[in-house]
Amino acid sequence: MSSTYSIRKPLLNEAKEKHLIKQMHPLWLQGMPGGLPDKMLKGSEISKILHFGKATIITPEGNEIKNPYSKVKENYVPFYRSKFETLHQKYPKQYPLSFPPRTKPRFAKGEPRYKVHPETLMDNLVNLHLENPRNFLKILNKKVPYFKLSTENKKIRSYLIIHYYTPLRVSEILERSINDYQITENNVTISLLRKKKKHKPTDLMEPISIPRVFPLVNELVQYLQDEDWKTIIKHNKKVTIYNLKPFNFCSESARLFVKKFHPDLYPHWFRFFYVTNLATDANVGIAELRSKTRLSLTALNEYLKTPKYVEEQLNKKMIEKYKKMGVIKNKK
Image (cartoon, rainbow, N blue to C red; front, side, top):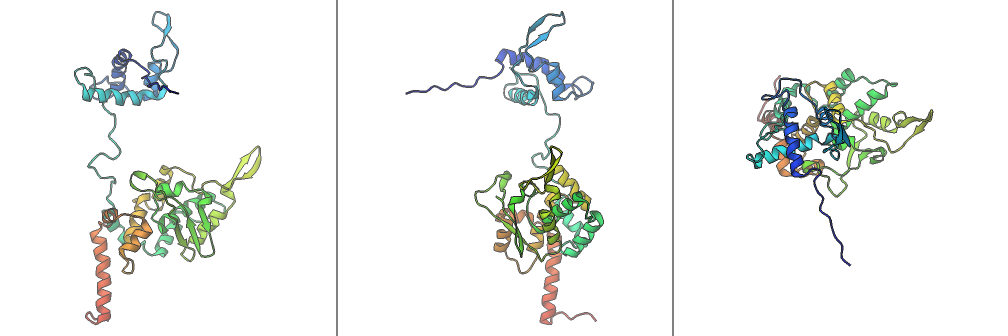
């Protein structure tokens, strides 16, 4: 028994695509250097002008004709923009019209990911002494006060507490459902598949635990066990759903919550801080650091490029060591 497979054909043939290039080119360049000095058009506005997805169109003479772009969906403008620019780059003679991107990539190749490099930021914030939970609590209470009746503030505080005590990425926190949290007498354990390079998850569960004796962790437990955020209104009745996400908000909201704690910080900084803070502890070795953070040696090397901060910490430890040896005398 034989089977046949059909090759998927493009929505538009070559002639229709070349016609679309001529029509779409001035619309795409509008408001850009080299284009018409009018308002820049959004992709949805371009698709509306070109009648994407409509079966028929009305000509200027008032005649109704079949639309050549009837199979093209309204959100296909970015796809064709990218395709036409690729064709222009490969075959400039056959496709002389260029469709340049309107904005630079968020992280262009060779450019830094952060406005303020983590190394510089760590040095600038060293006076906050966030390695001491008391100082973290002091800032948290000032910027995000605890109110018993405010579920929103409880949520933000709990989210920041997890950031402070774990090396988890923001996406790893936001994706967790309440079933991923196991609360015991001694620990809060978060079960997850840690993400690796390019945010690809691993195959094995790699849970991370936070001891409940740590400051603020019992506040996190109270929030996780609270029924308020698990309750929704359905048919004018309160319904409790037990598999919801405790931190059911987007990454942009997460960034704003961290900015609320301190205007110079961003979510991934806490991961950087966690690794650096552990590394400067004399009792934590590379093997333990890798086990806790699940980072490779190469990644650890990048995270630990904080010479000033690390040097100051190591100098303090060496001073204490020499004082115990009697090499350095204590100041009276």
